[in-house]
Length: 486
Ligand code: BG6
Image 1 (cartoon, rainbow, N blue to C red):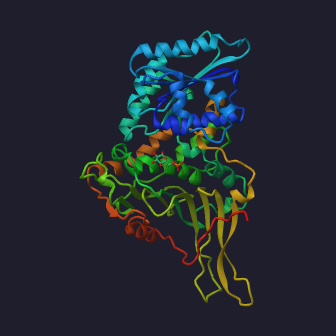
Image 2: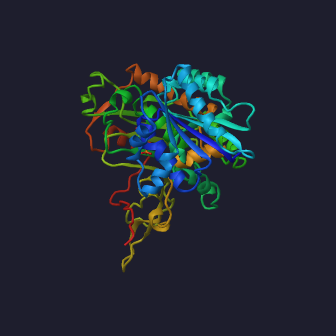
Image 3: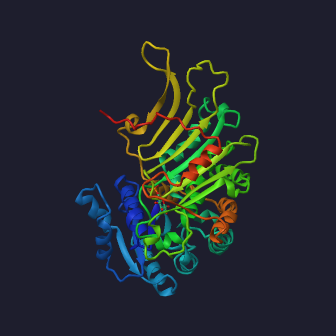
C-alpha cells in the first residue's frame, strides 16, 4: 500500500511550526523525488480566511535553495481549506477537497493514502482527531491508510498525558498514530544503534566496568524569544529533557534489541525507562536566566526553569552506579547538543609525571556533526611527554559530498512508508512521564527553586558542582575544534 494517491493534510497550516518545519520538509522531499507531482496533493487547513495563493505566499519565503520552476511546481500541489478545529463544516469541506482530488486521479492499481499532520497546540488534538475520524477517513471501500502525526507536548504530566493518549486511542489504532520527537530524526541519533551494536570495539566497554559517567547535553545561545508565555507553562524539562534528551538516553543505555523491527527496538527503550530510579532532589539543579521574566507574558513570580541538570540512575546490571547527567539550557554561552561518555581512569598508571586526562567518547549531534574519542598520546617531539588528543570522525570532512537530511524530512518519509521505529510509542511516553512527573510537580509546587544565572554563561555554577559530585573529571587545557576543509 505504498503507492497510489497520497494526500498530505497540514492542520495549523499558517502557524509557525508548519511554515518553519513541515512545509520545508515536504518541499525537500519533493525536490528529491519522494513526492511525485502526479501522485501527491498537499492540503493546508487552518482558521484564517486565505486563498490557495494566500497560503502559498506565506510559505514561499521558507522554501530555500530552489529554482523558481521547482518552487512553483511544488506550490501548485498545495491547496488551502479554511475552517475551525471543532466543527463539522470545515472538515466536511476538507474531505470534499481530498475526495475530489482522489477521484480526479486514475488510480486503478494503487491505494489511497491520507496523512494528517497536526501542527497545532495539543489542546485541540482531541477535537481535531474526532473531526478527522468522523469526516475525513479514507473510505472503507478504498484500500490504503489514514495516519496522523502529532507533536509534543503530549500532556504536562503523567495524568494529563494518559488522558490525551486515551482520547486519541479511542479514535485511532496505535499503528495510525505517529508521535514525533524530531531528535529521533537526527543523523547522529539514528547512528547510535549502528555504532553501539555493529562495532566489536564498543560492545565490551559499554558498561559500569569501564564507563564512569555519561552526559547528554543540550545548549542554546538564545532565550525564549517571544515564546515566553508558552514556555512558562512547560519549562526546560518538559520542552527538552523529558522528550528529546530522554530519547537519546534510551538509545545510549538500552540493551540490544532482538532485531531491528520497530517493536523490538521500542520494547528495549521502554525497558530501560522502567529501570530508571526515582530522581533525587539533591541530584537536580534548576536555573532561570536573568531577564527571562522581562517578557510581559511571563508572570513576575515564575519559578519555571530555563536550565536543568538532572541525574538519572539506571537500576540494572549494566549501569548500576553510573550517573547519566541530562542537562539542557537556554540563553547559555553556546549552541550545541552532544553525548559525552567518560571512561574511568586507566589503572596502574606509569606516566606519573602528570595526571592523565580520561578517555571520553563524544558524539556531537549538532552543529558540526562529529564523533571523537579523546585519547592520551605521546606529545610529538623529542621529549617523552603525554598530551590529550583525539580520533576524529567529523562528518563535514569525511562526508563532505553528502547532504545530511533534516530530521522532519526523514520522519515524514518514515510515516509515508509506515515505519514507526523513530516514533514514540504510547507505553514509552507513559514511562517517560513516570520518571519526570514527581520532580515536575515538586518544581511547580515550589519545593525546588530555580537559581538565577547570567545569560551567555555556562549556566548555574551549582550544575558544575553537581557534575563534580557525580564523578565527572574535566580535562583542562584541551578543547576540541571542529576541523574544516582547507
Ligand atoms: C523544540 C523545543 O522541541 O526543540 C525548542 O520546543 C528548541 O525550545 C528546539 O529550541 C531545538 O531543536 P533543534 O533541532 O534546533 O535542536
